[in-house]
Length: 337
Image 1: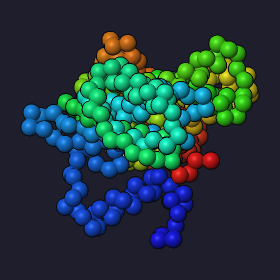
Image 2: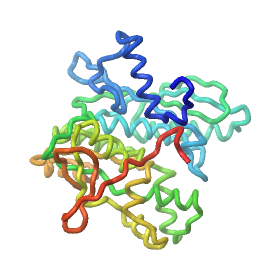
Image 3: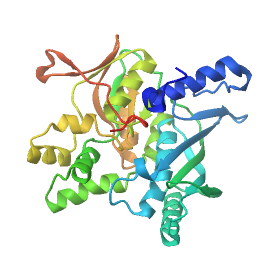
Image 4: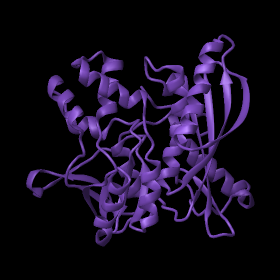
């Protein structure tokens, strides 16, 4: 292990190693959080019954900025990345700060655009901006830190057989956009604009995530930014259950793009990433109530499957006669192509 390189271990393997070292060397330093590892945020109980929820996420231009992304969009995305994870835990974001690494040749106009994007996102999500730290780096880095408050937390480990599997939106637009940007695939102008907007201007489902959590209907949830298939596998693993999809939630735009290029629309939806929807499990007797709440704030909750005993993630074929396994592929830092 000592001779292994970071790319051999991968992002998630390194995180597991860190927590193993904490438990072995400094167990007293570990916070017994209501959101334990590997959840995507941490929480501290407050005396008034609420939870203080904390999240940090790092935006690195080389790996997180798709071709053509403006500096203001980069700044905005650094905020969205944190807000989405808080939303999936049922927490309303309250304040944002950052540590920023700036290359020596980074132009002042680009820097002002980056900060303008951060401030615009703070206004969009009603956040207080607290400033932060700045240093020199080889690549542009914005390490965001966000705090929020929750009345009711939702872990990724609470799903039980009998629950229903749902999502807050449709998938495939961002994978289609990446096919355009990285592989040169074409699309009619209107479709191209829609697909590119999905990756240049992501939206965190903040109000929807908090509202759904407070219904008490949600038993587990995660943000889907690492890809739908990977998120489903993480939910299944954390809860010790098997997830069976009755349908893959593909957007019409992704279906159109897939038809043009004779590729799998389901593949675009499952193995894309950068889609900041929430994937969740719901108590069956409360599905209609949760859908009503979602619709009341202009959102939606789409049932896509069921939680059953077992392990893994599968999708039913037409008619439900058999189940096909869904691969556990998704984005992982240090292991990207």
